[in-house]
Structure formats: C-alpha cells, structure tokens
Image 1 (cartoon, rainbow, N blue to C red):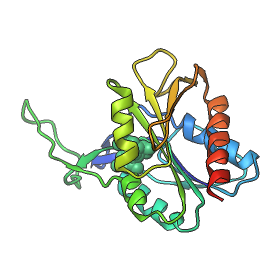
Image 2: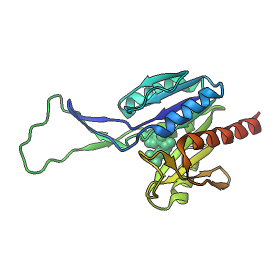
Image 3: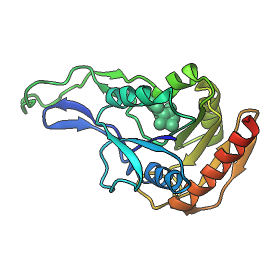
Image 4: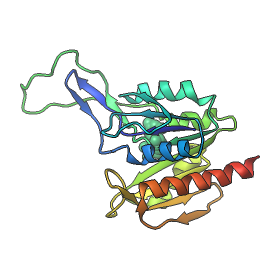
Length: 211
Ligand code: C5P
C-alpha cells in the first residue's frame, strides 16, 4: 500500500516557499492503519509535525516534483495507492537563488502548474486500486465526481473543508465516498483514525470484488 500525505513546499527563494494548511494527519492515519492490518506500507510525505507511523517505510519529500518522482518509483510494485497529500497546484516558475530583497511596493510571483501526480497514475494504472481525496469549498459532489472520472480513480474521499470538524488540521473529518458509476456513501463526523479504518474496509471490499 502506497500512501501520500501532507502538503508540498514550493520554493520561492532559499528561505521562502508556497505551501498549504495540510497537517498530514489523514494520510498518516491511513498508513498506520494499513500497516496494523499487515500491509507493506510506503508513506511518501511532505513536511509535517507528525512522527513516522510504526512499520511503514517513510520517504520524505518537499516539492510536488519530488513527490511525483518518489510515487512513480513505487507505483509498479503497489496494489493500492491512496493519495491523501495536498499537492500544491502551482509552483514559482523559478526559485530565486538568493533571498529576494524588499524593494518595490508590489512584487509579482510568476507561477507554473505542477504535474497532477494522481491523474498521471490514473493514466498509467495496470491493476492498482487508486484512491484520491478531494477537499472542496463548494459543489462538493460535482467537483469530486469530476475528479474521480478524470483521474480514473476507484474511490474518491470528498470533504467539504468549510464544515466545522472537517479537513485541514482537524483531528476529525466528515466525508462522502464516491465510486465510479455514481454510488455515494455519506459518513458521519469521525476521528481521522476511525475514518482511516472505514476507508481501508471499503478498499478491502473493492479488492475482494476485483479478485
Ligand atoms: O488538487 P485536487 O483537488 O485535484 O486533488 C485531488 C487528488 O489528486 C488528491 O488525492 C491529491 O493528492 C491528488 N493530486 C495529485 N497531484 C496534484 C494535485 C492533486 O496527486 N498535483
């Protein structure tokens, strides 16, 4: 089982970066729960405050491009891939080699799109079960459903990050599970550890159906 977690950091200059509020808790809970069930787990993680889950191989990365390299290196050997990482959609076009000095009143950063790792895996997949996450602030089901189809996923975990007790940084989450074909399961508010177990149960059902 290959799990990604946490934010990425996209360098602006040697001392600054663009990132997001992902804590990594959901991905770490998934990695720990999968290892507890006996899976061989690799966790590819952006920078977080969390301690490594027991019995998982941990690969630490910073940028989306590093995460992509690490994930592609593990993909062929994986049966299940769970992409809980909040990958930065854009990175500074160039990272300044020296610290940017404070001069003009306005400063414009040119950004360029990062590779969509999960979409790439969806196009490459040859039997791997692919699970994505969608953090949305509006039209949750429509946006998550679109990502499920476009990225060729077997399951997407959709959360409305505007709800209290859901999303970035929280210890709990409130999600809907979407499957190809349009099936939707709504789950109540639960601890991220409990949700990790539910997600792994659902993955187990999907694997059983496949074989
Ligand atoms: O950013 P977006 O909402 O499209 O993220 C949905 C899913 O795609 C998540 O599982 C995330 O980990 C993955 N993703 C990715 N590479 C990106 C952006 C998102 O793997 N550049």
